[in-house]
Image (cartoon, rainbow, N blue to C red; front, side):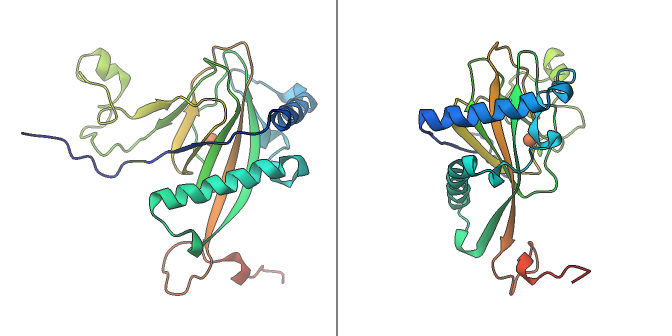
Length: 231
Ligand SMILES: [Fe+2]
């Protein structure tokens, strides 16, 4: 009997963070206020409102968000454990974190967070049909001819069975309160929202460092050993 043995999968870690309703509403109000402050620059074309490019890239500095980042940090450590890695050897730093607001017809175009190690997306407000997150790869291990795994090849009948073995794009549907963690280098974007209610997600980029880099040839040494040019 033959079978496929799948190796080198991308793992997206999914968990949920249930926040008390009043706290959640405070966060939502604060994010809508950020959007209102930048109304003149908001919602260009079909792009969602992105807080990182509008002066709100460090939400973890705001006291109101402290509890949320405590919970996200717990989730990151759970992801590390789920992968079978040792949390004790690593330090984690939130380097950037911002909210996104997606209204009807809007989406977040495909991108990756190349300056970071781990990224996560928390769905603070996720109305039905407001768009899932789409992960894509330009280097699918099974794509033995360039361009083979495009949707056109499905329409043309080459791909008879669409699935993770034959697709270079996969949509994952989050529910409100879900959080996804993934390597920052993973290409991702969102499916356009069909909902009249705003979708709010909070993204975070996390840098990891070895607590002690003795014996390690790769990975970032701890910044406490670094020296700035002018110091
Ligand atoms: Fe992103």
